[in-house]
Image 1: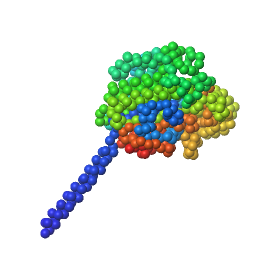
Image 2: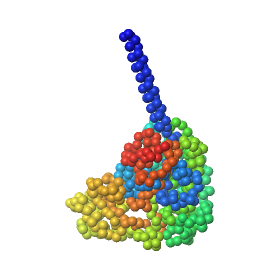
Image 3: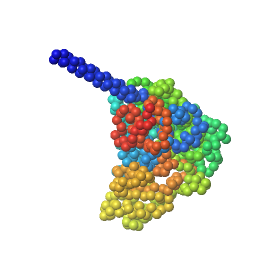
Image 4: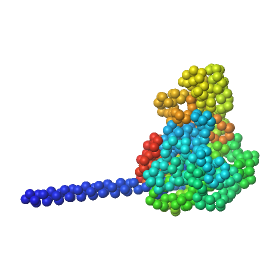
Length: 554
């Protein structure tokens, strides 16, 4: 009897273990299904894209570009930058690292380096050599970026088997997103060359496919007439073609369509003229498609990362302004380039096998002189006059003429050694300058480095200032302009502020793992990196401050 009881007990134990194993197996299967990763992630950054370009030009877009992303994917309609300055270098870095300049260290495109007492460029690296050009244009790397990108984390996760390629006309737009471990980053060298180049940080020589692409010199095909894609009379979503608020090209009397680029190239930097036209986007799309083919991206078991930055809209916006026919035509043509890119991804990687996100590194302000013409408060800040005035104040107040080392990026850098030598209190000098300049015309806010380093500022613009302040690299005083006030020419648009016209940018996801929908909930660009990391089930970038947007997942 005891043996029979033992037998049944053993049977029950075996059945219980079997049930647990089946349950465990079921969970593993579910987890395996949930963690299926896209073969390729494509991160698209459009340089200087306002969110309202999606809505303003919506009816003019085709079905395969921006609309495809909106109609098949997820639209975060209230997406913002959560720091200043809203510039290209910090923007690309923040998108891919999930953190702000406070932590990743790219505080501007260029900044005054307090250690070496001179201005440095965010991607400049004289320790490396140019690849593909005899000029210094290739002496670039991400060495000033302190944190990892999600592309770096993917490389680490896959034991360096997943590839990362960065592409942009601007070097910083290719280098910073791709991260420290990228297989390659490529950018466009215009002038008399018209080639895609790189750096010895990534390689000893250009791959065969890049040399072949450059040798074809298909760039020459874009030195042609730039006219509107459609009848200019139908471009009712933008202002008049002839106005007083646009710059234009050297050698052409008016900033009006059409533009004979072949004729104008000599007076506008040779092939560099293409950067400031809609054709710069087409050239970028051509090269990105070739990279997908030649690098066999998305064709094995390891997820690859392709970062593509469309730099030309920034050049066009700076030159012609956000309300120009040129900007509208640039976006209508970019829509077609996106459609080409997506069709190539469908063909080369497989529809439903890749994931794409699209955002911008910053937006832009309406031309202040235009705003003034329609009675909206706006203005122009005279940086030279400001520098003379604040230097004069410091000299007369503290009895020394060289207490200010640099004024740049709305920051004042003090000569701390001289201040110490004069037995002055640094905090007192900083505070005195703040109290002085806050009374100047067009200065809306000013803070000392001491305040930004030691005091938690409230939400709003103050918090954006603090998120952009890096204790080691930023200046002693930070100041903010009034709304729609810029230190720039009276033609064309610019950016850099904490106001909505600079911070509100698109955020679209579509492809594998992404559901269709939209949200008006506020999202921030630092949320992109952890969202992609969560999709790939990899570690977040090491400086990450963002939150994964779980509502975009299918």
